[in-house]
Image 1 (cartoon, rainbow, N blue to C red):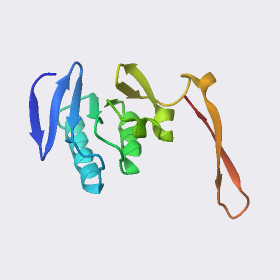
Image 2: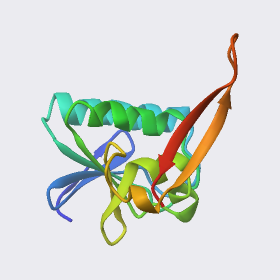
Image 3: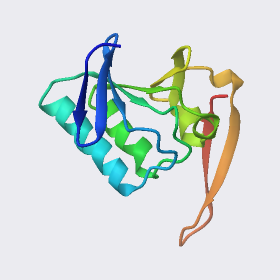
Image 4: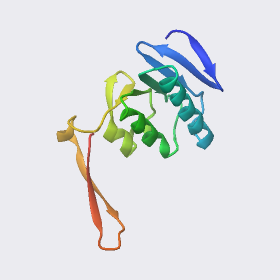
Length: 143
């Protein structure tokens, strides 16, 4: 890893082609932490033109629900997003299993969830309340 700089308590470093955010040794992120990550992502992408961004997850046990959605929004705009050293609690989350694939030891990259390891997955369905009838959403989860 190369140079390090600080952004309102969040540390940034270069790791190969990625700018990696380190939020510290907190196990549980709250809304303020997510806001800091969101603001830093916005600055890195829009002002610094960074295209490959990672988030150090080695201490994290719980993230706010909007975290993965926020990452996917940037992914849909062409940004490469990686999670570094996520703990088992994070890697077992449905969203993580569906939309992250390992690219090297301890590094997972966000992708669209299509076409990778689908044969090893399992079908899950979740009831959705509606006025007309129960709907089933079938998701194919990569294992």
